[in-house]
Length: 344
Image (cartoon, rainbow, N blue to C red):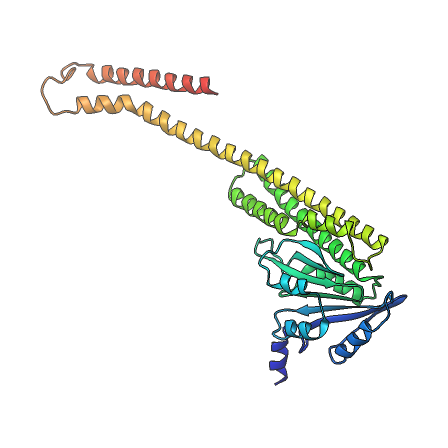
């Protein structure tokens, strides 16, 4: 019976809660459990405006009861649930009245440099509560969870979102570095003339970067609207930190775009080298065919079983025919190589 209960939790408790923390000024984060969470949420919502205490709740949406629990007890903005059901998964941060709703795409925890190893994290935050929810384990949120578990203190809910964006940017930088190392190895092999299976590796890396850039790049219009008209509870310092985090993320995306251009140039160079090798192979085959053409024609003519074959009775007929074949072969070879040299 205990084994069955652990299987059905999917890394979370009976409400789908993976982890929860309470933040207070000057104190390390305190872990929360689902046993008294409803009462603690009610007490949090009853605090006066401007109170710096806030909660962070992280849920596993693969758990069947997680979304129902959120709808019943968390009192989140409707935009959060609309984002959960929206098929558009581009990264964005939007304002929904006095709350913020973010859709953040991230790589899975077991990321293996495949375009399919991407998943989505949904975030809802206001002045007092941050809720993050995902279907599969993700690297950025796991990195932030470990930092909070080790006592990392956060001043506000918006700072938590800013730290999440920075963690995602760090993960993206690590991916770009690893892909750069792979591209460096491919480039070294190309310079050494080793072309085996490099086109597939470059194509896979480029597809990965394109998908990462398409899904991870924040929508600039939504972010601009948020920074120009933030909710009343967002102070100027938090807004500036969020702007800096977005700029840091943009730098990582620019590095990714530059790496895509480098891969494109390597692919073009690889195609040119493959075409050159193919051209050389075709040329060799053509030369062999041309050189064998005189002897094949003469062999066909002299091999006909009819009367009147020339030089049949001549004492030096064989050497005369051999001289003719050699002469025609040399002329054909000179013409072929002369044409090849003119093209080069």
